[in-house]
Amino acid sequence: MIETWIVFTLLAVTMQSVRTAGQKKISEKMSIQATTLVRFLFGLPFAIAYFLVLKNQYQIDSIAVDGGFFMPASLAALAQIIATVCLVKALTLKNFAVATALSKSEAILTAVLGSLLFSAGLSLIGYFSVVLGVVGVLVAAKWKVSLRDLSDNQSIRYGLGAGLGFALASLWLRQSSLSLELPRLLSAATVLVYMVALQTLICGVWITVTDRVQFSLIKSNLPASLFIGFTSVAGSIGWFTAMSLQNAALVKTLGQTEFVVTLLITYFYFGEKISRQEYLGIALVFLSIVFLIYA
Image 1: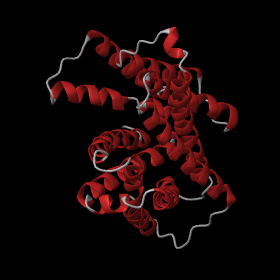
Image 2 (image 1 turned 120 degrees about the vertical axis):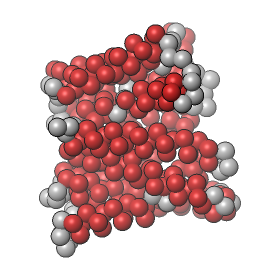
Image 3 (image 1 turned 90 degrees about the vertical axis):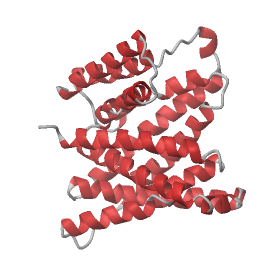
Image 4 (image 1 turned 90 degrees about the horizontal axis):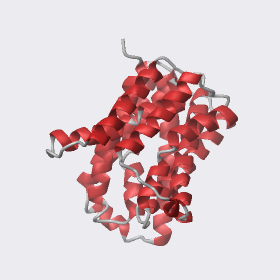
């Protein structure tokens, strides 16, 4: 029987791929900041509805929260926003391939930081699966970097910044979820509602101060905004629940299958051929999953 955390991770991977496609399309009509706000603003109602359904199902009247919940959840929300900004910035750089590939260090950074700062160490097989998964993605992406490329400080800064931000967000949200004496599905939903609400506030205030005209653009793109909001929360439900049930580094390693899914879509839907190197990368990712299952 497939473990619950694996099911939720695969849900997250699928929804994230769909959401990314939607965000890419809507970003042509509004600013990056507004596109980011759409993800949180229109996702919040769905997050609240999911939380209330679980709360009713578990028949829990009240939820006790304290600093052990609010501090890591707030830090996770900020880290996720900063990581997203770094990743978007990386895509605008001359050496964006370097920066984007370095952002894939997220799984390794999650494993290392989890072990050093969050008492969330892995077994030897676990660490091996994390490294193998990252290598598989880089191979499949045909990443070729020269020493001159690596000397580009901006590429390194934003690429690693994105990887570090997403890694810390994963670890902090897991810490926040585990602080609650609740069923894991409900604790993850509680963290999700708080983080999305805080991120909506932060992004909303930012646009209000810097570029209010974006609100009109958002209003004129309501159907697409609702779609992005729903798929975003569906993906977050997957990530948050999986990380509440399992070590964040292992969840992130399984999440590398998103790249494999993208390649397969290009093959079956768009009819593009997959090269030998891409097949090798896919094989390494799947091999890492085999090790991960026994980690």
